[in-house]
Image 1 (tube, rainbow, N blue to C red):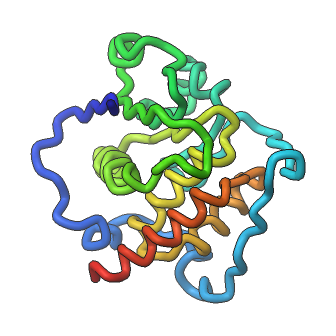
Image 2: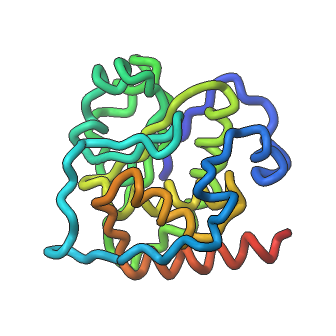
Length: 200
């Protein structure tokens, strides 16, 4: 069951794409973005090592691993007070996050190609977007910061910037080179992108 905490939110935006124009869009995902190539899907044992515990993907969105996800004081120093945690067990009790002023969305999933991560894409995207409009910064983390967290951040970018999974992953990979989305999650991102296009 997701642990979801949204403060001072009374009305859900009618459409993430309708409001996305209010956000500053990365130029690499807009002008000339059709030239972006599909990121290499790296697998365990062949991936680029992660140099940093987290990387900024946008000015208000970071992707990282459990080390940064459990370090609440460092998150605060970086202005992050919203967390999407995609591991089976939270690093801290949920009460610790709330008592320290964090909004939390817990997605208790494993990094397995058979996991239905797509069912979380829209809710997570909405959660991050609402806090973006509130001027808050979000960390999306899993254990290694390479697959689950990247997939969720990708889905959010697809909603925010009205782009497909390939372009969103390409953008994330420029910011965090060690991404390694498992094949099952990648297929679900492609399907999710097709569903978003059909809703237009």
